Length: 429
Image 1 (cartoon, helix red, strand yellow):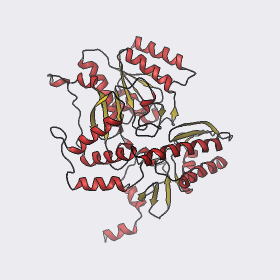
Image 2 (cartoon, helix red, strand yellow):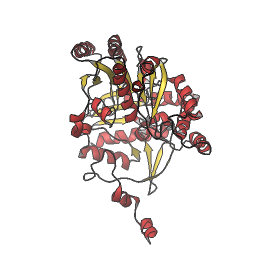
Image 3 (tube, helix red, strand yellow):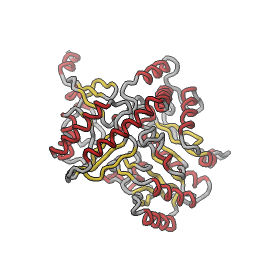
């Protein structure tokens, strides 16, 4: 009888009984949509309606949902080794992944520390920067970050994030952080002057930054030359540079990592999201040999005592390795070029529309601001979200910012439908 009642109750109703969703004020939420299937760039709801996944499910499923190349590799691995403690043990999937990552990471990266998600990746990067100086006997306990940055939801990650909508209740518990604006060409000198002043006033251990694109801030983009100058000054003052590539990594900016656009390379790189192609949760924090050497000691306390139960899970490592193989393939590289060009053409279609302002693009990331006043999670934004969903397109506006970050395998016809949904929104709102 219980089973029968469940079958007669919708997934939406069953969901509401027990589940607490992320980034959701449930009293104000218009409802939660059950997705029962996904394939390629398409999501399917419980009523069979299709939606083009225009943001690759938070920038993870870049090779498409349920990619058969990846799922076959992981299925085979499931028959061999599913999970083993990574403290005191190792396994081939992690070793092979480490070798593949080092091949595509910036040349100064040498060591990899595994964890579970983007927040833990940045948390570890912050801890590496702070403990690096602690191990060397340096009195440096302040982190430097950009204004309007976002680095995750754990306490260290929240501390360096600059979006109070996420952090308001916890700010009394944060580590010390000072901030600089992002460089925009026009303000490069001003930013450098503030940076040098902060360095003279504070004992800064590390600088954590989203290279070139601030995702949660609304896909705000800054210039490579300006960031390179900041990194150079930080390097001169022995400030550890931590690149948060959780969103930007793995081809989205047109290069494997956004850090490749700068001459001054980061000491530490944080990775997750597209790392495992959206199939399984995992993260990696990489670092240079110099960082690792500060922890390599006969003193036990100088080790990095951080660990997660599912660290370097063999299935997640296998998914990540398969994803890197696809990223390196001729097909995906051509698709990145194709999507980049398609966005450029679309930009020419809408850039002069009176409701369009501040169009911007880097690789397959395209964004613009809708010239309509609205709150980040307000009613107008909710109506805009509903418009896209009614159109059969999953886009998730960040306030008045509309952006596209679709899977690399999206077809031209699917991209055109995404574009048409945006053009319809420009006439409606």
